[in-house]
Length: 173
Image (cartoon, rainbow, N blue to C red; front, top):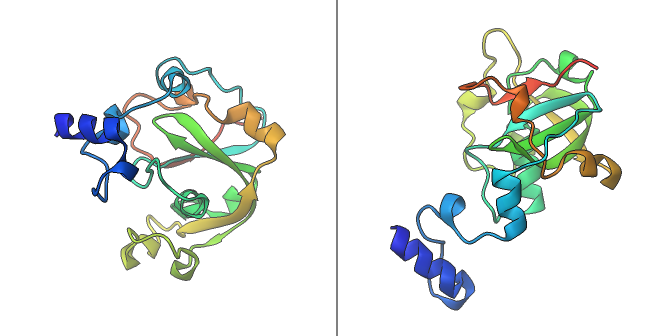
């Protein structure tokens, strides 16, 4: 698989008849020096805003459209909309690195109709868990000034080793 992925990566997917990249290219594929620096020596983000961290481990791909990234980030989370509405931004994370920042305008109960690009969601994803409503936010990409504070930076220090939570509130400010 790794040899196949390397050859596909070397030739470039647009030059081949393959419909998908090789196995493991998300982790081992071609990357720019800047991407490698972010992955292996990231600058630590200094949290300056009220943020919620959202891990995109299972829904992230390098080729996500802007709409797909937004939908993957906006829900469906086991957060109280009432509590989440006290936070201003949502940081979308991949392996502890911020890939995008959204200004959360409003948190509300999750609605399957709001996720047109998400094929991974099932009816069970919208059932309240442990008495907490499944929620989503509506929002927009943050301003460039706010994005520069976080995108490409690490927030790994805010997660205990082995933490399984896919979302959590940021530090109190």
